[in-house]
Image 1 (cartoon, one colour):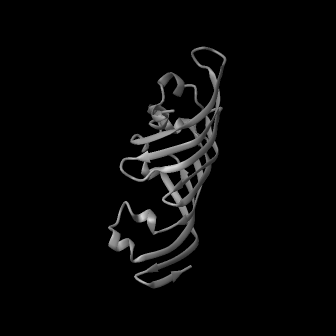
Image 2: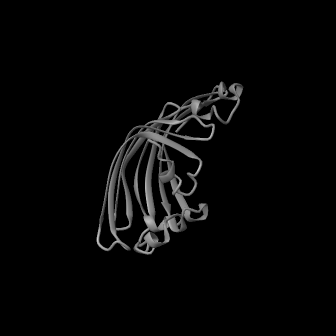
Image 3: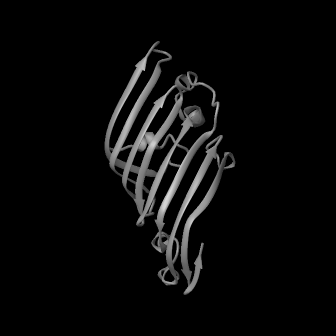
Length: 180
């Protein structure tokens, strides 16, 4: 299934290609010009790619929408050998002019910011392969696990804050060990 039209609603994700098996239900109730929408979606066996970067594979996603709030109960995947896990929520109104004006007018104001918790486990030097030459990567060994708590009042970079915590860092740079 091609999720490009949905994914492109999210600022910054316009150039992502997403595929996988999807199960979805959308319910609309009320007036035709201002329906109350609710939905849930499950993506399994998915993949996500941005440009020439290696894909995020084994993607699983469970999300819902109700009363103007998008909730991601779980999102998991693998990237360059690392496990990526995420959960959180975002007010749909943060998508602003990316939504049809008639639908946007039915949304409640954002009473709280978007919040997502992200965890990456087993990040290795392989993750640097798209950005560094092989000789530089050969000088790096180890593994890093980290967590990030991300809050956004807008999807512009100025409206995003993150607290990042290294849970595990065992790294060697040019045979010099660095450990947390």
